[in-house]
Image 1: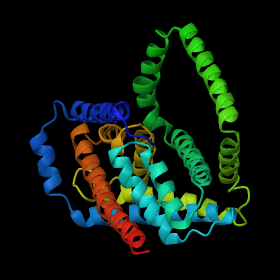
Image 2: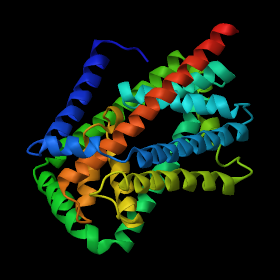
Image 3: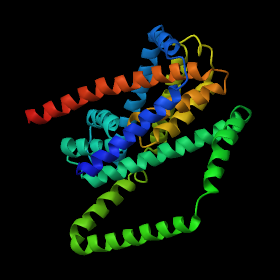
Image 4: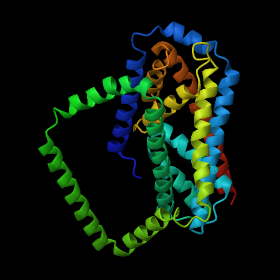
Length: 326
């Protein structure tokens, strides 16, 4: 990835958008009371919540390792784990860069072709998207009364209002231009770099086919469920960290996980701002004030960022030290 001025400006703009959303979320709130609630939080439960997230990260590494094994690449658990943590660390600086970053770590540590790695990452991300959609559907089915009004007022009405002002001919024209550009670009790339392009395609296809070649698909799906279950536990445990959210049940944690999942899909560093707003909104559905929801989301987001900063930096040091020692 070439990091030029245009790329730098793009990520600076995304970061500023995240900060803007964060400022909007906290605008008009009693910051002193929020800070007081954060200061007096029960950090035993914050640590337990962070441990649950760490277990989810380790399960992610095990799941990713399975995909490599299915296409006959010997990637150890620790290489996969360090790559995952370094990827999360990179995402704090540059959104979506972490996916390329962790593939690069595995490429250097275990000599796996970059595009084969990218194929495995896309494969596992598709399963994460599927889990997010399934949990969203479960939320709608089992908690319809709690979330229906919010979804209608905040999501549906706003989306339909914006869609009503869209010029669809412009969208169709842009879509056609993008399609033509893609076809032309692929054609010229194949002409100029035919062998290299073919090698890239073969490696990508190998990565995409990693799930179909798994001998233990049930274990892979168990890891996937485990990742989301420990994310759910992290939300639930953190409820006990402040008095205002103590006593909330799993259904509130389940809704918060769905909302936070969509927040983290936003192309903003670490989901900053968007995560806080979405999680606080989800807790309003269970009688928690927006102010208290912001205090809770700030605690859990900060603990996860701190975990990534510490363990991601440690993983980076270990990988660089090992490389230097060779």
